[in-house]
Image (cartoon, rainbow, N blue to C red; front, side, top):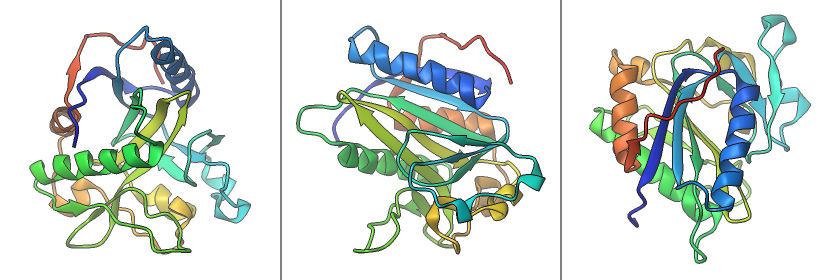
Amino acid sequence: MRARPLTLLQDDLVDYDPAMERMTDLVGQRQRDERPDTLWLLSHPSVYTVGRRTPAAHLPDPSHGIPVAETGRGGQLTYHGPGQLVGYLVVKLAEDEGIVDYVREVELRLVEALGKLGLPAERRDTPPGSELLTGVWTSETGRKIISIGMRQSRGVTSHGFALNVDGDLTPWNWAVACGMPDVDMTSLQRELGTASMDEVRKVVAEAFEASSTGEAFEASA
C-alpha cells in the first residue's frame, strides 16, 4: 500500500446537508490544489442516505420519523446516527489509480484499524452478478461493521465510510441496508462488549496516516 498522508479534520455531530455542502467545498479546493488530501471524521444525527440505484422497496417506513436524503455517492441505502464514526475522504488520485483501487485501499486501512482495536475483520470480493460487497466484515461472526460509498470527480474522491462504534443498531432493521435484505449490521460495542469513540477516532486516523490541523466546521446538529 502506498504512503498517503492526510490532513485530519474532526467534528462531533454535524447535520447531513451542511456536511455535504462542506464536503463539496473541500472537493473543489482539492481539485484546485488549494488544500491537501483530507480525512474528515464526524458523526451525523439519524438519517438514511440513498444512492442513485436504491429501489423504493428498500426505503424505511416513514412512520419511524428518520429522514431520507439522496446522495451522489456510489452504493445503496445506509444509515447514519449518533455512535457511528463517519469518515469523508477528499483525496486526489494518482494517474494510475481509479476509484475502485482507492476503495480497496480504504477497506484495507479500516481492516488494519479494527485489528488494532481487537476485532479481526476482512474485506470481501464480489462474486459475479452479486450485490457489491464493498465494506468491511467481521471475520468471526460474518457481520458487516463498516459501510463504504465513494465517488470521484475530476480525479478527486468524495464521500467515504461509516463505522458503527456504539450507537443504536435498531434503525438498520427498518430498511434494506446496502442492497442486501439479509445483511446483519453490527458495531464494535456488539462485537467486543465495549467501545470508545475517542479511541476509535485515534486508531482510524493513524490507519489513514492523518494528522490534525485544528481546523473545525462551525455548524452543529
